[in-house]
Length: 319
Length: 274
Image (cartoon, rainbow over all chains, first blue to last red):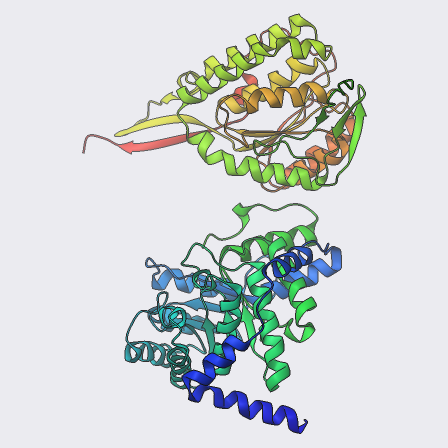
């Protein structure tokens, strides 16, 4: 470790102290070439992944899935069933790996915790007045503490987009720091809700802001607004985590969420991860898919590869 | 002024109401026209499209399905010359239109003939109603090119099934032209999907596909292939229609067998007089 990186690190850790320093830093980040990013993402989507590589990619993608249900209609029975599916996605095939995590609302955490205990599958809970984030800070923190107390070991928080878009970066920063503290040992995923950030420049700024404030993961979306995860947005975020590790030595994970429904899409993302940040991130600890319908498609493709015949949705659970 | 260059037509697949090329990019020549050579993945995409269309099509009222099929018959009549230009005798086109109309008429009658109230020894209404099987894979007969095709598609879809048709490799032009007829009628996309190319490539995929509910082997002439397809179809207990005998006469009254073979019977017990 050289002297320059050490000083750069201490400089970055000082940024959160003042609104001006934070703004100067975030607005000093290089702009994103929109056409370039979209073209690069499209180009990475054209790779052909077949046979054994495809089989590996599918198993990796299954291990990366955050099996999610975030509905007003969630019941204890429904989330228990989902947790059981997370442990054994394909009951007909014991060689099928379990998923990365189950993601639910805080009120549903205790029921999922019962099922997942000791299994190695993580339990994520959304918190901080998900999905809008429009609540007083005390309430957001209480929400977070309650989720952790109930057994969640990963917290998916939403940033305050109102404050971010108004340019009050310090406020967003402080909220993330406070939530990180409230989460204790739980991993903190910071949802940027890129669909509401309007530009790639904002996505890059929000990514850096979340990482500077101590987020362990940056996540694209809540899945509750029309524009969810896209390839170019995820590309910008992957570049941000790469540059952040170069500057600070700390590795941050990325989680695209919402709108990834097919195996083909998932494999495109994996190719992008490998080409942008390298194999260090090709692990469920550093890359996740926030999805629900994706899992069934992965399982169908997996069955096709193992049996040679195309499967159908009738053979997998509805959830 | 330079001489006008004629626009040559490429005959494409018909999947989900659209006319895509084969994902494999392959094509072959028939009567000096380029025809798409469908791959396994095209077959899979067609099944996905057919499955997606089941809910809307089976859920439509029988009367509505009948009206849509009449509309298709109108469009078929209007394109008579186009089929004649492909070498199909005018009489055969007329017979195909008549066959289509005949089946269209059955849309809201088949349930009356094949369903009904059952007398039971108990205080129940007991009612049986025919329901569509679901997604049907069809290997179309080679001849007659149009009448044969219509005679296998119409009875399957009139009751609410959706179909993936493997068109005859030697007669794909009539099949794609029929697809154009269907695309310009009110038939929802995905109810009829047509694959052109080698039967030996598409049919085994369709026969083994777990999301296909029935397979019609009418156009399979190779006995060994037919056996192989039946074995594959057994995996998820597909309904199987056996190959037609070589001398089958398509011009005679077809009867109801082709419709009823692709129906399931739902019986409801309803308590009465409580």
